[in-house]
Amino acid sequence: MFPSEIKLGVGTWAWGERLLWGYGQEYNKTDLSAAFRRYLNDGVYFFSTSPAFGEGDSERILGEFNAQTPAELLIATKYVPRPWHLRRSDFMESLKQSLLRLGLNKLDILEICPPTGRMTISRLADCAAEAVELGLVEQVGLSGMDAHQIDSFNEALSRFGYSIACLETPYNLLDRSIEKNGVLDLCHGLNITVLAQQPLAMGLLTGKYNTEAPASGSRRQLMLRYYMPRLDILLRTMNHIGLENGGKNSAQVALNWIARKGVVPIPGTKTLAQAIENAQTPAWRITPEQTALLDTLTGKTEVRGEG
Ligand SMILES: NC(=O)c1ccc[n+]([C@@H]2O[C@H](COP(=O)([O-])OP(=O)(O)OC[C@H]3O[C@@H](n4cnc5c(N)ncnc54)[C@H](OP(=O)(O)O)[C@@H]3O)[C@@H](O)[C@H]2O)c1
Image (tube, rainbow, N blue to C red):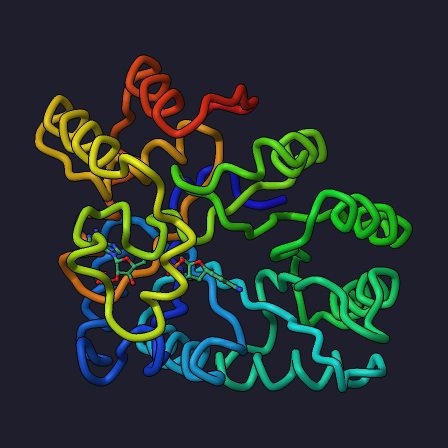
């Protein structure tokens, strides 16, 4: 089971990722270290990474920071099936490399990404169960799977007596597809904690970026999917809601809206200032009326499991 007291985690895609996020130019390891320490100071200790982020540098940086603190973190990383992964040993090798980069003997949560090639759902569940039995992994999670895949994986894993702790999936005010495609309901029904990737729509919901002032580099292209007509009205409303809640900003409102849905946001963070703002998320809540207003502006859908 994913710890129910965790209401916020930290996404680390940008840690060491140069091309997409500008690591080494716009921000550096000192910034990340300050953000990391601030999160711990504010009681946020869940960090999610992947061997795919910065070609392993995200895991390396997180491992380095972890080694420098006496605090106990909860760390999740991913297994990403590659087309050339054919055997169980490929899975184990990938996991061992992640453990090495993170400086751990045992991982808290291994999130399995969608199947490819020979790495079918059933083989992935076998491998994940073996990793738990070998004491390399405490809990199994998923990342980016659809409702059918989650259901099948759950069935395969339950044969070993294990359950899925969490699912990482994109979720934010501009992408509410998990409310409509069955993923959110299924996860609530199976007691799988949903972790929202891209809770700020890659930064768009902070209000910093728009068509006149887009993000730089290749992020600009990826962010395009989140633009919606009348985004300016949504952002103005979010700022207004923030003001009504003691001077919060639109990023903080965006994270709160997710928390209201019973989902745990894992905002990507590059700087101390961002960590300070994001870490405040669990301490307050937008009202049901404010949630409903944001629901209406972004396409109303009923969801269960409000937090
Ligand atoms: N395939 C995968 O495995 C996958 C895919 C996507 C995401 N994820 C996970 O989900 C996490 C979150 O998604 P994400 O990082 O892509 O996007 P996000 O959380 O929606 O946005 C993060 C970006 O927004 C800006 N930001 C964050 N807090 C802010 C604040 N308080 N004020 C102003 N700007 C702020 C920062 O960029 P700027 O300062 O440059 O604006 C930051 O890098 C990832 O880090 C990763 O762990 C996983």
